[in-house]
Amino acid sequence: MGKKILAIMISLLFLIGCSDKKAEENKIQTQVLKVAFNQSEKHPQFKALKEFGKKLEAETKGAYKLEISPNALLGDQRATVELVQNGVIQMAVVGNPVVENFNKDFAVIGLPYLYDNLEHQKKCFYPIF
Image 1 (tube, rainbow, N blue to C red):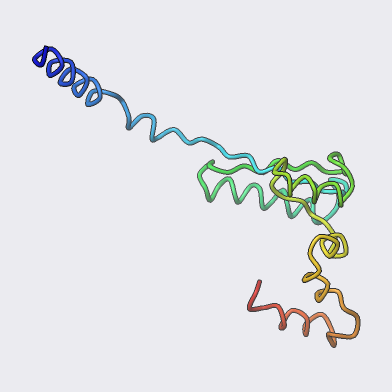
Image 2 (image 1 turned 120 degrees about the vertical axis):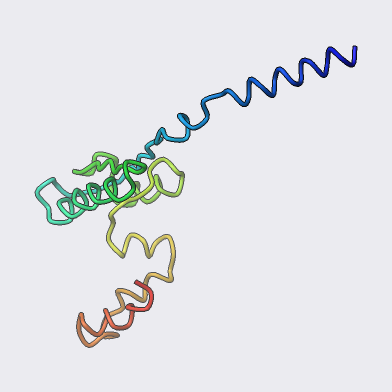
């Protein structure tokens, strides 16, 4: 009985050694990142997202791909943030006031009279972004 088990184990080891694991490793599984966007395809932010998608796919050698849903196809901005929270989509382009409703820390970005101008605001957030 012991010799049979040993023979089976050796046979299994040979089969595992002969498997074509390298071919499996070379296959790239593409991860699709779904993005909600509430403007049209002519909007500059949509064009920027398209360009970002092209660069993302090129830089990751096809590991990641961006799928943009424009024209509020997935709902209004609040609904798309909720879709991100629930893991239905990975990204949503929304205005700061919408995000403030979910996390009050973001309110500092839109506080009036806190920044002298846009450049001042950029300097304040430069270490973060």
